[in-house]
Image (tube, rainbow, N blue to C red; front, side):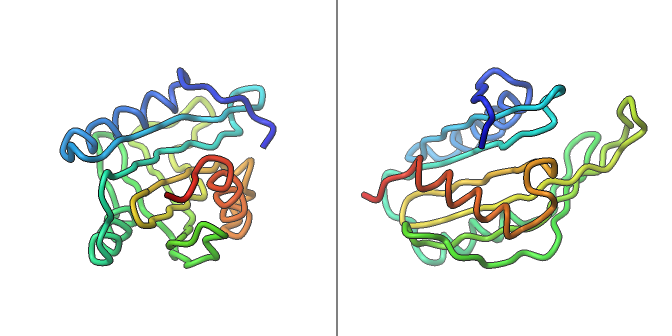
Amino acid sequence: MGMARNDHSNMAKLIRQESQALAARYPDVHSTTTAYVGGTFDENYVTVMAFEKDSAISDQGRSQILAGIWRPANAPGMTVVHGQVSNVDPGSLGGTLQCAETYTKTATTDAFGNSVYSTTQCAWVDVNTVAVIGISDAVSGQDVTKGAEIAREFRAAAESRR
């Protein structure tokens, strides 16, 4: 991807807080988070939030997890919604891989007057792993197909079948 892993970036810290809150509710779930950043202002990024469960996730559980990932979210000062969710080829590791364009609206604007930001988001769920990858538009080109390619590449490098 041509970007450096940065576990201490603001992006990595934000997703780490979110994943730790989720993992705290489920003692048999272990989380890993990171961000890969590049560009002059870290405008090129891929964020990764992954979970591994000690036991198998049921079919119903996998469906519920995916539905939860794509649910609109509200947090103080921001709203997150998703475009059309597409089922895409999960690659050789199997499971389910879905991708969508994700839009975040903030209550305040940045230095350039922007208050709406988009990323390509992909999520996979299989027997005992769940991961969500956020890919900046500078990297994905707002292209779900490109986002799916990046997700498969990352997954192939990071995950091994048990």
